[in-house]
Image: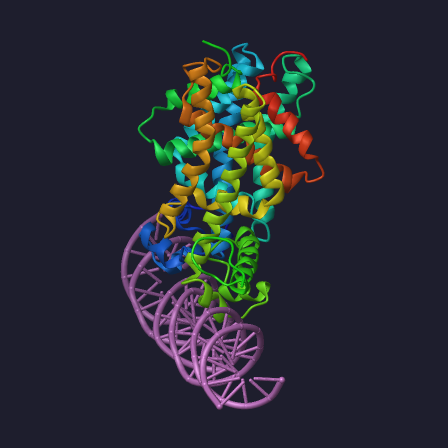
Length: 209
Length: 209
DNA sequence: CTTTTTGAACTGACTGGTCAGTGCAAAAAC
DNA sequence: GTTTTTGCACTGACCAGTCAGTTCAAAAAG
């Protein structure tokens, strides 16, 4: 008998069903929230019987937790890749941060619903999946913190910066700007948004051009 | 007889009950989300019977909407005051932004639950109070946008900045940094957090001290 | 001053509906 | 032959909203 969770076990067919369920759940939960989304809705949107949901996941919360892990895994990989690429090209840490901002924007552009849902749940307390969220948050923020720390060590960034706080602020800057972009002016191009955030990152806001 | 507070009649007693319900609702909804919070819980925490909730508010959603309006009203007033004060002191627009960052932090420090709940609901779609949220969001962001626009007009900020996007990014920076502060390192002082964000705002991250 | 009336505010048991999760036999896929 | 999916009926808990009745302070009447 299969156990859910780890990536290795499932057959290709099962994996496809799981994927469909993730996709259905992510948009519904992003729109309505976890509690307001019913398992029947998820099954219906995925084009699958309700029993199948429970054959593949132990419960609604477990489905959600695995969805979180899955999504943040993608984001983290993408951020890391961006940072490593600029390092390979001999860019400084500012370039690495800039590349990560872009990677973040690309991610949000591709998976807006996931981002929405993540933000909505992250700072809640007293929820079943709280510990999962903490782990998953740390994974993503750690990549940014890593780059900041290396920058301080290199002398590229001031020693006075507060690494965890600055990392959180940078993440927040990208997150909120991107969600606003998607929600309120979706016609803007990614490059446009990226340019605005780059400018802010590099302190080129004050002072004439 | 007492005659005070907001628009339209409402006895002092009634107003006090409403206030208790707001306070009970804000923490519960911040912790658990709107749908997962029951009216019974809100009533119990407020020390009031369930019927009283419905005597004072037409429905659970209406209670929530009025809570949102109430909270964002406080924030907006606080931001505006901060901006005007620096203007009176002859500070530049960067000082105004800095003062608003501080005002934002003070607000979040005082009402963390409200902030949490606001963030969690802001980017959801298809919800009953969607239009309320939009109005209320615009109120707050408009204050920041106003200062940015004035700064561009004065020549203090580059003409190339994208006002709405930059405003969103600044709000996000403060929001996420503050929520992280409250959630994960609550022992930090407000000044500490403010200093870190100021540094980021003024582009004093890169380059040795 | 005392009694009666009024009505706003509040109460909590109750109702009708919803939903997570179960059970299982049969079909489909592999 | 085994794994996975289906379809559907069922249960038990939970919950938003209702409503008939209670409380009580202040106004009106005596």
